[in-house]
Image (tube, rainbow, N blue to C red; front, side):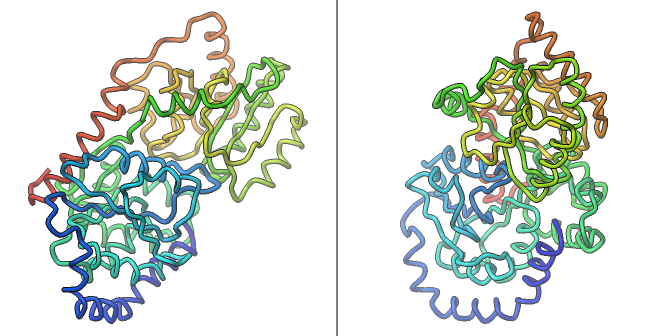
Length: 416
C-alpha cells in the first residue's frame, strides 16, 4: 500500500457528497431496481467486491475469491461479483452462473458511486469485500448501501507488519484501520496471527472477527499441474518461487541465498514466477551475482502449477506474509517447501504439514542452509509425507463449510 491506495481511500471519503447524490437517484428508482434482484428467490445474495481478477504479481486473493465463487452452496446462496476493473487472467474462471458487475473505472475512489448503484440494483444480503484498502473504501460507503445489507470484509495481511515495511503514510493507514474496521459486521482473518494483530494493534473487537484459513482446491491444483509438460530443460535440482517482485516478497534475499546454494550444487537452477516493480533491479542483481544462466525470471503465469509439480523444491523467502496461497498449493502438490519464518501465519501452516521447513527471516545464509538440507533429505528419500491436519485446516470442504456458516450467522444477526 502506498500513496495511490491512500489517495483512493481518501478520495472515497471525499466523494461522499457524490455518493449521496448517487443514492438519491438510486432511491428514486428503487422500486424499478428491485425487479433486478432475483425476486421470488429464497437464496441469499452475496456480492463479492474485489479490485480485479489477478495481475502480474501472482493473484493470491483473486484465486481465493474465484474458489469461493465456485463452491458456495447454490441451494442457499446466490453469489455476484463486482470488479473495480473487469479484467485479469482469472476472469475466465468465474462460474457462468455468477453475474459480473464491472464498476467501469481504474481506481477505487471512482468505483464507490458505481458500487453503490450496483448494491441498490442487486440488493445483496451481504457485501463481501476481500482486500485491505478496498475494504476501507467500502466501509466508508456503507451508510449509502441498502439498510438491510450486511458488510463482511476479509483481511489477508498482517497489517502492522505490512505498514512496518516502509509504507507511505503509515500513521494515516493505521488510523483508518483503527477507525473503520470496527464498523464492519464481521472481519474474516486468514490466520490467528492476523486476528490477534487487528485486536491488539488496531482495536478491532474480537467478537467481530473470525479466523478462516484460505481454501485449497487440491483436485483442481492437481489437474492444472498435469495440464502441461515438465517446463525444466535440465534435471536440476530445480527450485521454484512464485510471487510478486516487490520488497516484501524477499526475492533479493533468495538470489543471495541461491548464489551460496550454487557453489555447492553447480547444476541447480532457480525459476521465479511473477512480476512487479523490482523486476529490473532483481535481474541486475542476478547478473551481478553471475547467475544469469541459472536463474530464470519467467514472468507471471496464470497456471504456475506445472512448474511447482516438476520442481525439486518450492522456496518462499518473504519478509512478511499473510496466508501465502502459493505455499499451501505447493504442499497440496506434495512438494517440500523451505520458507522464511516471517511475520504472519507460517507457524500455523507448519503445524499442519510436516513438508514445510521454516528458516530465519532476512537471513540468506540460513535460507541457503535450509535449501541444501531439504534437498539432501529429499534425495535420500527422507522427506516426510503430508500431515492429515492439512486437509482439515485448508481443505475445500471444511473451509467452505466455515464460510457458509459465517454468512448464515451474519444474516441472522448471531454473534460468532
